[in-house]
Amino acid sequence: MNCQRVQESFLDYQDGRLPPVDSAAVREHLKTCLECQREWAGLQEITLKMDRLPPVAPSPRLRAQFYAMLETHRREADSRSPFVLMRSRVDRFFSALLPARPAFQLAMAGATLAVGLILGTRFLRPAAPAATPDPATTRELAQLRDEVRKMGDLVNSTLRPQQSANERLRTVLASYDVPQSNPRLVSGLLNTLAFDPSVNVRLSALEALFAHATVPEVRTAVAAALPREPSPLVQVSMVDFLAATRDPSALATLETVSRGENYDQAVRAAARRALAQL
Amino acid sequence: MIADVCSQLHVQPPPPVVESAPTAVDSPSDHELMIAVRAGEVDKLGELFERHHGPLYGFFVHLTMDRTASEDLVQLVFYRILKYRHTYRDEGRFSAWIYHLARKVAADHFRRTNSAPVATDPDDLQAVPDQAPHAAERAIRSDDTARLHAALAALDPGQRELLVLARFQHLRHEEIARLLDISVGAVKVRAHRALRELRDIYFRLAREQPA
Image 1 (cartoon, chains in turn yellow, green):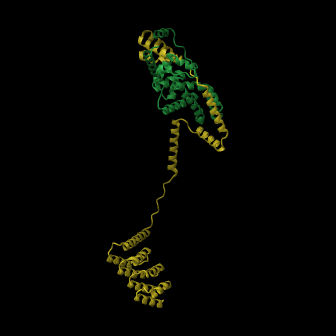
Image 2 (cartoon, helix red, strand yellow):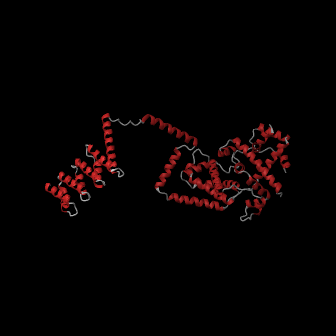
Image 3 (cartoon, chains in turn green, yellow):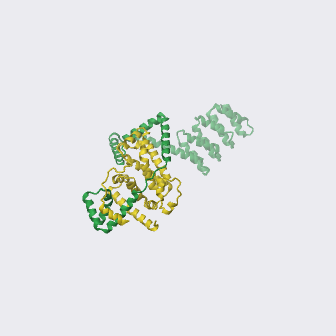
């Protein structure tokens, strides 16, 4: 036995835990090795001093505090609600059921995950892809989308103030080619009739609105725009529009115009004619 | 002094080991008592307190070198036993569990106070006014004891804890190994190193401040 091994065995030797053979070897070594003798003596002395340290005892305060804490806990436990009792039982049930050691917890988590994956792959089918529409519907849908886009562009361009009068006129004329009555188109034309600064553009818009005269809102909007219209030429055209539509609800407006002093003579005459027709 | 000890060594072999030597900490019925506490018989905790508060107090005193704080820490350990009693396992060993809780409480204490105990000058220890004189306090007055306390306080906290568990709490190497999550061999090597370190500090202090 060399010095290092002997010194590493000192604690076991001191406690009498070494096998008899090793214990005898340590004893033999100690008889001859001065260095180990010094090491062993120092170790003995310090452990002896540690063992001789007087025992430390706590003050009575500790015992008093402990029993006060126990009493407080007992009182709280006595006044515990059934819900809390049930919860503590559930907690105890799960703490007894689930593994306490981290290694087992990890194994259990892994097993649960594996079972979940197996069940998931076996019983869950991927969602069916959405049914593809037939070609005719697709075509029709594309056509409608295109038409709606065109209408939107038309209305937007109508309302764009930076366009020249010619361009606005062209836009209004282009709406003649649209066969169906479209709310956005009609709204654009009525806006043009009400707010466009050019008389020609307003007249063209009114002319375009003839195609949509069957829509009650169009007739109402034209009757409403008539008193606000600054140009007698457009006003006369509006009166003719209302007369042509034979809308009885326009009678009040036409009567007001026929009697109004601030209207042009030609406009009032046209209103009277329209009243006679209606 | 060393020569005296040396001369004794060869004549007197070490005493035979007593497996359950001063087992201040564990006994067969501790586990049964704790199971009863877990089942709701909290009065049984009083019996466990009577058995273990002394050794636990010693553990904290040697670890923190602070008697008042040690009483609070013992109280805290028993509070946690009460609070976490449902986590005590059927196959668990009570001594291992209580020291596991105690180590956590001590770690929290050191974190809170932000320092481990510092080496104390034995002269300063003597100068501390003795407000509650009893046996332990009187012992601290002696040079030797004060020097040993100072040497213990100067040890690395890990080494001090190992020595306290092995020499003062009389835990077996296997128990310490389980508690610290290291091998039994590592416990022996570390305990030996810690003892040597303690011895060196102690004799250095003795040279610097002769009685």
